[in-house]
Image 1 (cartoon, chains in turn purple, yellow):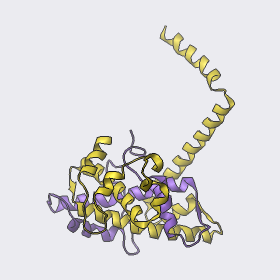
Image 2 (cartoon, helix red, strand yellow):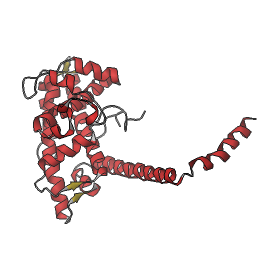
Image 3 (cartoon, one colour):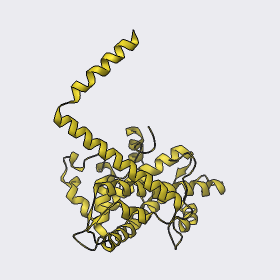
Image 4 (tube, one colour):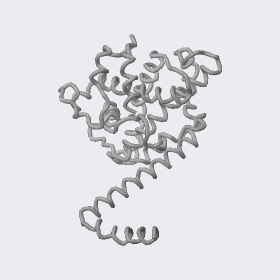
Length: 94
Length: 172
């Protein structure tokens, strides 16, 4: 039961619809491999946000992860040119 | 796994920001195929509306956060989960537009794994992870195709007999 298949994840159908929602060209297509890969990427994105939120809450001795903690970690995760620059696999999380 | 999902549903997500009423999540149960449920509402066609897509994203995000919560022994507030889910939904727009542009730049209409790797270029470790994943996925798909070919040729049973005989001998 490695992290790769186990647990929750984004279904291919959902990923496909999410992408197609924003395509400008009707002719744009997505291969099946890409859907699986994008599902992984989205999963990483969510887990990374969650784990960073946890770290922030732990640093603040907060009882749980609230929006206050999340707000502090979001800029590094999402915004500006340096998005993903500090991404690294959290220990124990594949 | 199912008990975990059950507990998530019972929290009756009720964030005031963007979600439809909590009853939505009672209907929208996890399933591999969207057509599993009898109700017309859950037909794949109805996933077209952005609101329903958001709800589906929210559900998956909730499941993932619950796994993290269990692992790190730290709870997430409902608003946090809603915020991450909104963020993910918005990030999809960036991803989709970038992917489309990358493919178009390469004069293709079909997005392939190279385009996804370009998306992940900003962080070396992320790029490596995605590259490894793409190779893993390609490998799995190759093996599946090979298995399908074997089945259709009907040669599966014959190749097994010598292996079983070998096992019996070694036990003696």
